[in-house]
Image: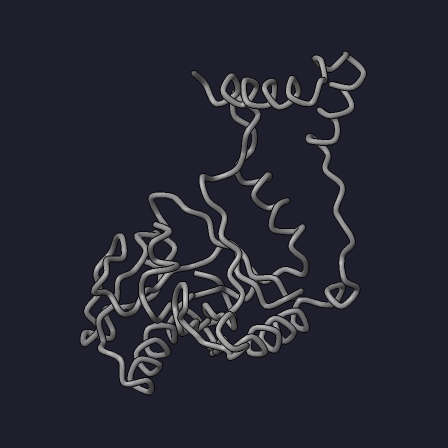
Length: 234
């Protein structure tokens, strides 16, 4: 069963339970047009600013939700920024890193004390390093998609998650992220473009379920550190 036929079977079952028959041609055309040309929702005016101001806003919004941010002048400074962060927090210089070719552009070899393994995160791993599809100044949020180059375990298992984000990937509002995925993914034979998983991450994991007291690391990383890479992208 293809993805399209499976989807049609599920939606058909929902329509029958609601007492609705198949869509007529006009209704189907209207739905197809809405899917093909989605209209953005309300976009906060605060995101309609120049790119350098978006980076500033993203930084302040991320820090407001307990993430930490380090802005470096270029790709060559990334390994040093990661090593310094680990040292400052008394963390071992051992990383599990996404097998993302974009991360190969950073000169990790200049920090030989960093022990780097590429692949899925496992329970003993304390520090994970990934990239992100985009960041959004709207709320200081990161968009991450799953796939062979970015296993989702890296977003949740290590207690410390380090994200390397080129400044040019910081957009304004969430809608820009969905538009980016559509543009990058195109449309396959089933009319789909979405990866298996899209994670929107705003700060480290936290909860206040117990006595309304904030606790970090409840359902994922207790630390989220974002290294924003300015200058020319790798």
